[in-house]
Amino acid sequence: NVERGLLPPNMLEPLEIGKHVVVIGGGDTASDCLRTALRLGSEEVTCLYRRTENEMPGGKKDRKMARDEGAKYRFLTQPVKFIAGEDGRLAAVECLEMRLGEPDAKGRRKPIPVEGSNFSIACDTAILALGYWPDPILGKTTPGLEVKDWGLIAVKDKKTGATSREGVFSGGDCVTGPDLVVTAMVAGRKAAWAIDEYLRNKK
Image: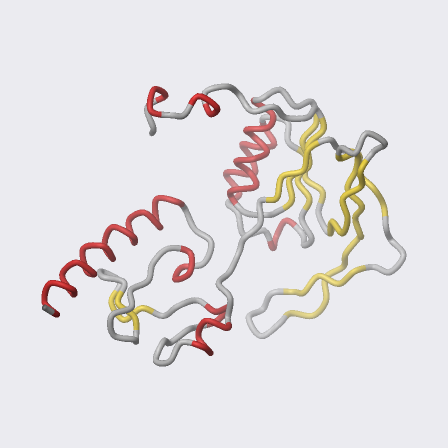
């Protein structure tokens, strides 16, 4: 909800985007990227996801809206390489076909590459809409800091972001995993108030 007048000049003009776009990822951010690319004038927009639609973390409603606007989905597809044309610009994405293996401990089936199934998809723009996770080494190198699965930082109090180590507060994606920007903003504001109170009381 930023006022246009508050944006820097270079952000006031529409983004330049290619006519053939691939979006790599399976969450709600991927759906947002698909719809935005179409609204910016792309002729063909395709989402590449390495599992099936049933395993996609993004919402069904968002996928339906993306499809309604013209987005395509290609499942069991793993991008492995970007291919440049003679002009040095992106010309295609090399992919592998995947198959689903046995479920893991959490019931999610692991995608397995199909050997020799390489193929290419022509495109002039690729958007990475992938989830990122904290470096798990953080818990091993920070005494007294408790971490959970995937290296996520455990908080003792969600209202303040206080962790198991005194004086250390945390919030945002390193606590929740990939989430909305506003979720991180709320966590940051709560942590800021808690840190201020902590420092005042420590004096």
